[in-house]
Length: 349
Image 1 (tube, rainbow, N blue to C red):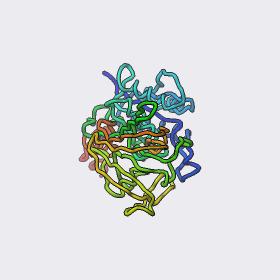
Image 2: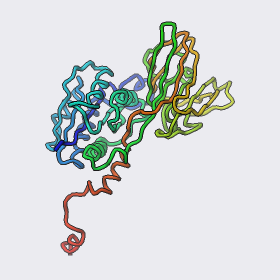
Image 3: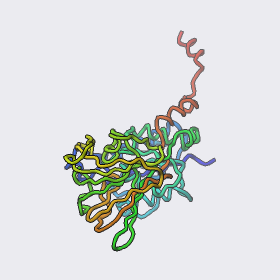
């Protein structure tokens, strides 16, 4: 019988960028990630008698430490793959987890929006438990690692069907027409246009730099462009389509909102236009000199370019941790072997 198999991707670079200095984001160091990874493996033992866990290797020792400290009920090992200490590692591991000899039943991702996006682009239909250990954490869940492990075990073991406890998140795609040719970029929650003409520290922190963009979800409790859109028209993560936004100087705007631009950074933002978009419905921006960012980080430097953004379906299959645990409890998967209640009462007397 095949054992339940869980993939773990812990990004050493997540939660450690410039926003720790310029904003109020908390530090998530690699020691903390090692502890979360340990907790994930312990959580697997609640729902699975014997599980396999495969880790993306890393030079920070997160995977190595978790494997060394893994409980006896979990057979933990690292993928055999080259380590580049870049986003390429995340994408390589996610592709390996998708199919073939290294395929997994569910993947646990420790990181922020960028890490989850990189996983989503390669992992196909594999359910993802995205645990917040990054800077921009619109999509990842702020859940204890042990609880995340329990949820992953319930799905990997087949006790809870992915159809019962997952939802499909949208994506946002950009196609830029430049003098040098076409360029493309994919965002998970947001793609935004900034008037800053260089990538620099990559963090988007100044509201006056933002010209607009498109989001696949919107809620005032999110961060960045998704929070700005959500302050006007909330969109659930599994709703079709998205929101297109054009921003302007608050002094010139007929409508403004207050929103969380980045961890520890709030701003008043001027709204020029808001448009509810269907799947694949484009919004066009002319960019004489600027940058397109994905999920809060600048990515594409552009000059004399036209960019079309559109929300697209078939993004990652995200696990609802609470719904998974509730379904597992209803199925009796969290009950240990014990006497019937009537016998308990007799013995107590």
